[in-house]
Length: 137
Image (cartoon, rainbow, N blue to C red; front, side, top):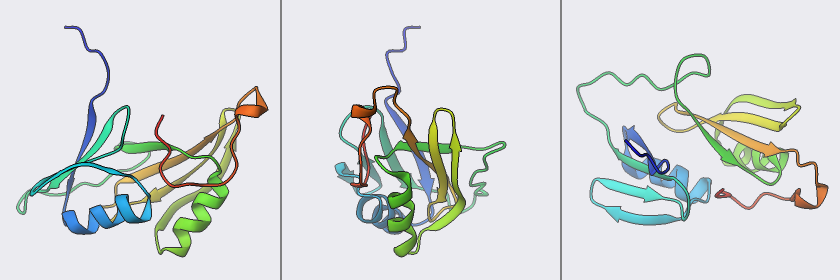
């Protein structure tokens, strides 16, 4: 086996229109491809792909301790949280500072967890200000 990179992260969602509204309009992720039952979001690196969840299977969502958490890099986690909070996005855990940077955890409409991470760079010129939606790696 020769895996080159992660191609996409696939989420089964209860309401694809509600999830498109969240990831595209609220989070600012560009739509790369959209079909009736599949949407790819992002421009480079791994894509976030959405498809309708089964109507009969149990949805388990996620948790920091034992589930899936999607991680996004942002320029300024404080303004990102403020912007998303003003849009009614659920904040799972507020901003925490660590050696590597600051992060906060939010929830999407299906209760998947999303980490918003603002890294600390040794070269402070790499640090960005402001929040401009999704920041692809």
